Image 1 (cartoon, helix red, strand yellow):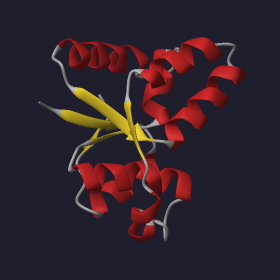
Image 2 (cartoon, one colour):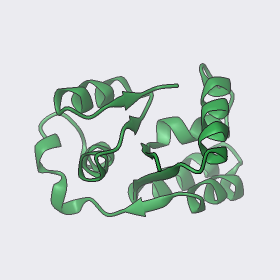
Image 3 (cartoon, one colour):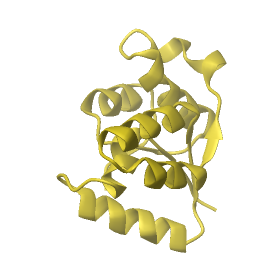
Length: 123
């Protein structure tokens, strides 16, 4: 079964129309339909709560997060902290530990993920 690590820049596209939202929604629906495991850093819950609050979509944001498997990443942040905040590094740490592609639209995270051999998707 396929597993993907999703960050807030990707999951937020379910709640707000912005560039590439339609493509992400189609990809997301396809992965859910195929039984893929969508996981993330525990940080996602906080980021999506803030995003939902700011955009008047708090309940929907929490429902999206509840559908994912969340992982702690504190012990694995080290290799990523030179270039990223601890918050962003947590997504890369989870992707590295799970050997799963990272789904992100954040340019800096994409660069760092690739530098560390993590596959990146931005559907």
